[in-house]
Image 1 (spheres, rainbow, N blue to C red):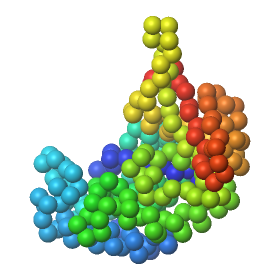
Image 2: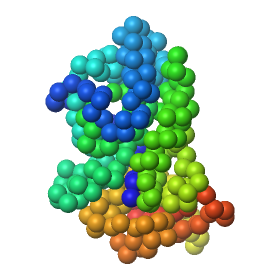
Image 3: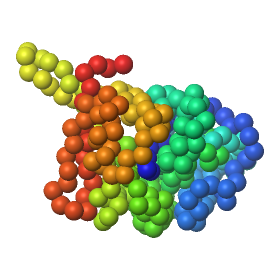
Length: 266
């Protein structure tokens, strides 16, 4: 099983280990594309802070993020699983997993990134600021830029197993499963159901959506679940106590759509 995660804007304030070693990162097929993004981002942030803030969509109060990008090659690093600290990762709580579940996480979780393309949670990277929605002056929109290298690398990473896609919309732009990989892919949406004037109404709540996805991944890792496809995933999640509504694709070669329905927000 390969689990596709979005990154988080929230990150550890600093690295605490050796500086970046690009050659050590997983998915080496992405290395040339990573080098190009890294080169342009560092050059931009070293040359013109105001322009860099504009390109990255940062307020004046976040000017320090530009400085971090300028020092990406020499800054200390952390495993990606420690670096990201947003809502999803807080709920996932990788640090508290037992050894077997941590090994499963290292093998199955893949975090998408505007700067790195995608990394595994054990890959050591420095704190950075560069979302997939950024449009660099030279390389252009990163969502579109990453599509070409991802076309080869991601199907190889997926192998012949299930792909659980929990990415947000900005990151789905970088890679969309096709063909047989798509038929083994399930994308998940979290819906909050509540009764209003006697009628059930459902809505997407961003914060809770992320937290539920984090807990869902954690539960799968702790259980040691290995569903072979979307239909088996639905059964597994229901066994774990989730209310899941599944929609099989109308045509072959399309991903499944799964709604996880919750009634309490916490």
